[in-house]
Image 1 (cartoon, rainbow, N blue to C red):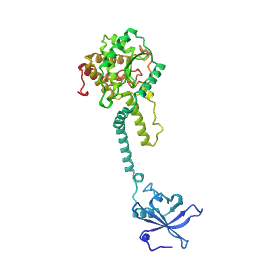
Image 2 (cartoon, rainbow, N blue to C red):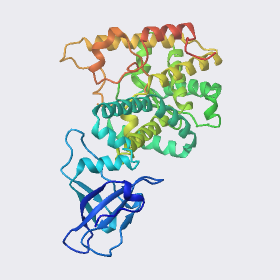
Image 3 (cartoon, rainbow, N blue to C red):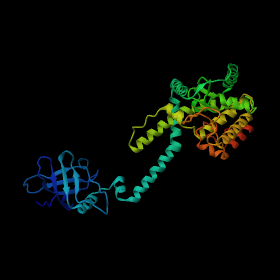
Image 4 (cartoon, one colour):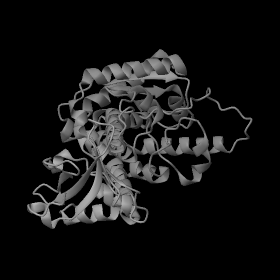
Length: 406
């Protein structure tokens, strides 16, 4: 049977075998590919079947095969006809020639499969896109989504986290009650002077509360929802160096900055956004949900968060008519102590109890180039991720920093 009339007459006819699912034997057919508005269509002309009408398959009814390699073409083309079986064509080159003549154009995926430069280019673009998403997309999305996180949720998260820390290595404060009351009064007075955060969180009013703990080196950190924790060691460090309590108040102002800018919650949300984005990009959403408490105890604030908290502290201390220079002196003193600690013989025990392997994300930090040997130390540090310690101390002594908005 060799049709010579009809719109398919100008198109080449290719011999093929049609497995129609009705019989175990293939039906010999001639295949014609025709151009259509939505792509090629396929016509099957049964052979050795007098009077049999051609079978027409629209573009959407065919699972069109893809070429995997221009250099190594497959031995035969297998065409998926959905519920009507499949088609095998041995004339591979003739099939793809007729397919192209019928108006078919390979998609991006197929072009990448057959052209390595395109595949490598797509991989490079994907890597850059993921990097930009991580660097800029997730912080921006987290800052916006945090607006909708209820304060009650933050408070529960903070309580759970503090309980975990207390059950682990934190111990009750050993400071005299009078000393704790004195610092609490300074904290309460500072909190009353605290301005609201940026416009995005204008309605955010968390109750600020100060807690004291021992069991870890000199530090202070903020938890979502308004709780600030100060260690006995940092209070003792200021006393040993003869630095006034204004330094401790400055540290507390920094932590209040973390609270009002919602840095802890933004970090939790950011990790969720990142996991979701990577899950969608890589086709795996099994790790989308992450534990907020675990995140807060294992990651440090970003440098931009730390700078933001520093700027808030400078503004708050100025509003309360308090100097920021003592805070700079305290930071330098702690940095020198940690540097000395890093250079001690390995068998020497630190003054404080053993520190945990993880570091609370909310601890404010700064880093001095001269102190790089302590980077591998597990000791919790007030300075571990801040900008350069000397630069930061200078800014605090001057009462302003170039990166802070006027």
